[in-house]
Image (cartoon, rainbow, N blue to C red; front, side, top):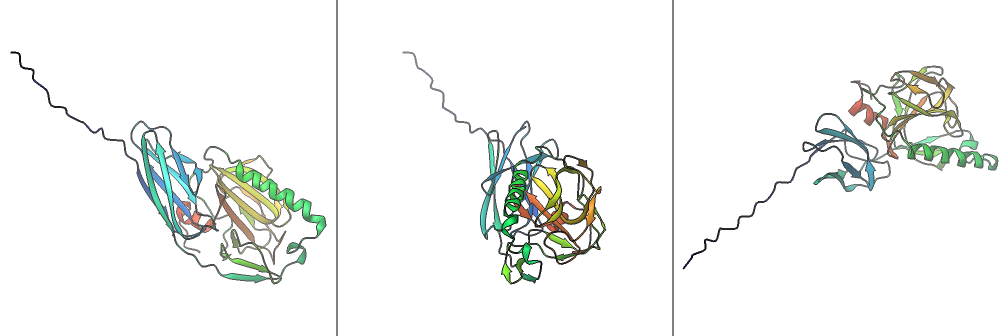
Length: 282
């Protein structure tokens, strides 16, 4: 009789390629910048990053290292928010724990027309809001900034990001940027390279320059006395784009610098802390 030898059945578990994630931030609260570092398996050329229910652009920093800038918007509530990364068959996630943040209140007296605008200005205000919304939705698809970010003026920031604003006794939207003490006429420098998306007078922010740094990152420089660039112009880091002034809703000459990152309002000082040149000032 012929005997049949039955070979044992062996099961092999194929190791899946892995993604390593790490984050860097000044702190984790509303209005903060988070830098996500992504170490990918070899041979991966495309990836998808999602945070706060939206896609976040990523950029390559090395053969297998990518980074993504994640903005925690001013209105994000404390809690746990999951960042996900997918690259081919590999997936990874990171739980971002947003902590509570207390903002102070400021009370200012300004021209009443900038608190309760007259009916004659309503159409203009709506058109300008639509213009800015369209700009935030259509950033350059590649990274335009280079190297470190710099302060647009040398002055100290004297009005904190996120401050609750009361104008002429009436509550209005929180302060979405940082104000820098600077005399009128002080040159205003581009915080980094980019394309000029807006260079015109706007109702609330006066003479305004918006720089598209690419991949959803924007700088708004407001209340200028003069604008020295044109829309569509490409600027280098440190290039003069205007002069400090007191146009729009202001109490005096200063520079208002606001940062948008994939439509999240981010504290410019957070950007400087993580991506800026070393500076001991607040």
